[in-house]
Length: 264
Image (cartoon, rainbow, N blue to C red; front, top):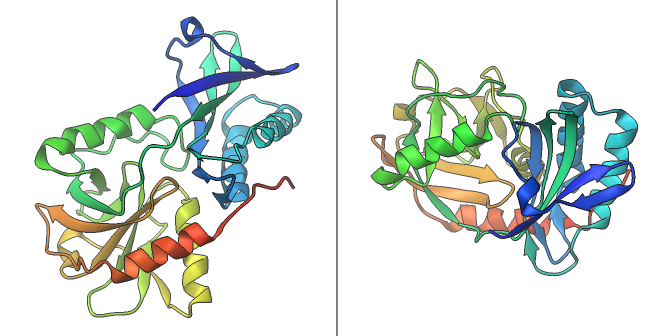
């Protein structure tokens, strides 16, 4: 995935040459899919990012607002992109950066496996644990899995390494999110899908499912890049409902929710 990295300064965005891209700790980040200038719930992504930046870093509110305006101005109006905003810990202070990245191919399905451990240090903040979460995916890949699912000590599902889990329990027309009593990232994509569910007249519930309680359930892993992915298998787990009709329809509804980004 090719990318150009810009750093925000008082004079605006500055393109960083490769030699200045030494690895620096990421404190906060966020990403979203841009397709032909349209994004699903750009404002919610900016809100989540801004809330974490103000809580976790020394970035002033005015600088953050100016940065968001710069990012908005760089939203491409053609092609598929997966830009990332972030705050990195620089020896001279916290720095705002924007990564202009081409979007990788989206997937409609996923194969799940339990993550070998839970490496998260700040479960409610996107950014500080990204490398460790990516390592979870790498760890389960030899089994054929494409997403690692973090579970707690009771084998209850928490979230995916780079995704959120939603469940349609077996033989029901009710969709459930993971109870927020478990520490996990507030998901923009989940919030959008919950709004769609309510507009469709679908009951929304909360649950704390153990892996073995997913027998015959329809399981989705959702994210800003892929929207809805249907889990076609859970390695070392139960058989799932893998009929794709509902997930395909909701994946289309999610895409239809995309709008041009607007500033508040």
